[in-house]
Structure formats: structure tokens, C-alpha cells
Image 1 (cartoon, rainbow, N blue to C red):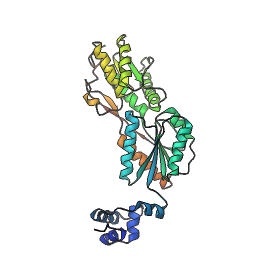
Image 2: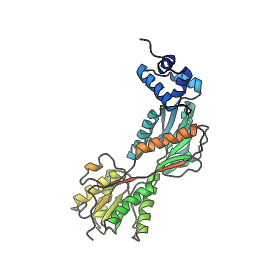
Image 3: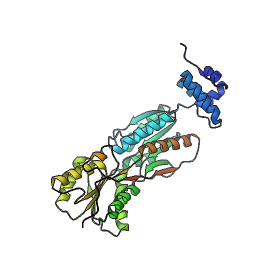
Image 4: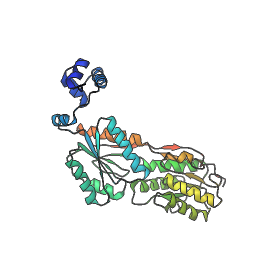
Amino acid sequence: MKPANLHDVARRAGVSHQTVSRVINGHPSLRPDTRDRVLAAIAELGYRPNATARALATRTSRTVGVVSSGDPNYGPSSTMSGFTSACRDAGYAVQVATVPAVDRASWHAGVSDLVDRGVDGVVVVAARVAELAAARDLTINQPLVLVTSGSAPKISTVSVDQVAGAALATQHLIDHGHRSIRYLAGPDDFNDAGARLDGWQAAMARAGLAVRPPLVGDWSARAGYELGVALADDLSFTGVVSGNDQMALGLIHALSDAGISVPGDVSVVGFDDIPEAEHFLPPLTTIRQDFAEVGRQTMGLMLDLLAEHQPRSVSIPPQLISRRSVARSRV
């Protein structure tokens, strides 16, 4: 059977072929009932637009490029997943450039590679401080959106409010009567790590509580375990905020090995709400980041820029997920 073409769709929907073309290309000045009729005809006939012809006609590829380090950590990888889904929902394909090194030259080369492939716009997932610095001085003609917890004047950015998230975690412990709260920080070359540390410090300062030096790990459960062993030697605290859930897992393991109960002796709050967090022993109280919303907002900013709107920034609020790793302080 011969595949349906644009004219077949137009006949089925009772519109002109130009109207079908406008629907396919996301033209804004169409009546909703007309758009719905055309989309229904496309679905009924199984019509698949010719991407090459459409690109020649519109001078767009309906493709967005994404530059990333390929970091396997939960935050960066979930950001990529959320954005890819949002692109697909908006009818765009994704081209990915994975940059193995953190230096400026490598990141600029990754962006140039995507531009050479003819993408309509570029998204940079800047998890590290050096990646954000490289992105800030990019000069390209295509629209640019950054996904980062840092700032980038005159560039559209999307972030989850990491400072607010860590403050929320800390305040939850304070509200349960904890006054001596330690902090497990991520590596200082990550933007999120610095922002979360700031949030913990700010919440402690607002409550008039002493801020002791953070213990720094590398995001891994192994690091959390090693830091937990060190903390177990000096139980002058009743609560811990962990910079991510994996380090919280290692911390709880180390405290358990030392005969210290969570949450009986020490309460713990993590960050990220990884899928396994509700199955920790005890189930982990943590801060959830909505990565699907990060993806939607990133694609929304990209579409705004493609429509020649001005750059803007979006900050997505995090959510506290209360489980059983926090109890009232007994001190």
C-alpha cells in the first residue's frame, strides 16, 4: 500500500496542504479545532513527514543539540533523560555531543560539532564549574540554553533551586529538634555541590546554630561510608544532611556498622530522591528534583528563543520527601 502523503492528509482533514504543513511545523496562528482535525488525520493515515523536505522548505532541522560530559551521576544523567523526552514530545530530534574533557577547548569543540551538524539550537548541561565557565563565553548564532545551578547573564538557564533544597533538608532536621547537624558535601568542582553547601550553611545561620566544617566526598556510597566511619568516632551531632542519596546510603551503612541507629541516634536527610531511596533501611528522607520538569522547561526556553523571544531563566523548586530516616532529636 502506498504511504500517505501531505495531500492525502489535507483531503482527509478537509483543509489545504498549506494548512497541513503549518500544523506539522508548529505554526502558532492556527485554530485549535483545525490543528486537532489535521493531527487526527495524520494519526489515521499513519502519515510520516519527510524530514529532509521539511528542512529544505523551512530552513530548520527540527533538531536540538545537547552538549554533556556524559556524567553517569544521577543528576546529570536524569537531566539528559528528561530533556530527551521533552524534545520528543515537542516533535524535535536530539543530537548529542559527549565531551570527555572538562577544559574550555573541548567544550567549545563539542558545540561547534553540533552547529556543523545543522542543529536549530544548542543545550549545554553544565554540571561542573569549569563547564559553566566554558559555556558563558560561547559565541554562536543558534539559540543557547544552559542547564546549570550556576548563573550565566544574558543566557537562558534552567535549574532546580539547589540552595533552597539543601535549606529545606536542614530546616526539616531543625524542625525535629536537631541543633548539631553535620553536612556531607559533594566535590567542590560541581556547581550543585557548592549551591547545596550554601543552602545548609544559610539554614544553620538563620537558626543561630554552629556551622562546623563540612566533610567532602565524591558523590559515591563508598565516600559516604568512609565519612560515616569518621563521624562515628565523634557522636557530637544528632543530624546529617548528605549532598546526595548515594553518600547518605554509605553513611547509614557506616553508622549501622558502628552500632549507631538511624534515626534512633542520628537522623539523615539525602538529596535527589533516587529510585532506590525509598528502599534504604530505613527509607530515606530526601529532596526530590523534578527532572521531567527540567526537560520541559529547557525545551520551552529553546522554543521561545527559536521564536526570537528574549533569554530568561527558570528556577524549579525542589520538594522534601519525608520518610523514616528522620526522628525527633533525643538531645
